Image (cartoon, rainbow, N blue to C red; front, side, top):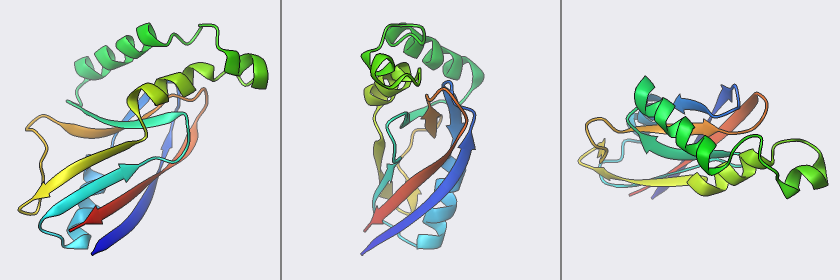
Length: 137
């Protein structure tokens, strides 16, 4: 059996990191699945999903590392073609990726003690983001 759900979050853009672990837990509780795989996916090309210890230091370190890899003020061909100034956000999202799969074992996500699931919005403006969740037993 596969269950599909989704939820939306409004973000601030510019590397906004949002903890979505509790939103996912609500969906899983409702789904009543004990063992399986949970897959999360974010439609769009300027946001990503990953895991991190969601605390200010680790979040700041992630943002700093992303800025070093794909600087906001870098030269991007995308900006020349479309003129929207968000070439950096497309590159950043591609580096982290739009999806994540997590095993569900004995009714719990197989996350580490300090590991949370986060949505990272890289765009250069606020957005309403939709997260698609599929749970397969």
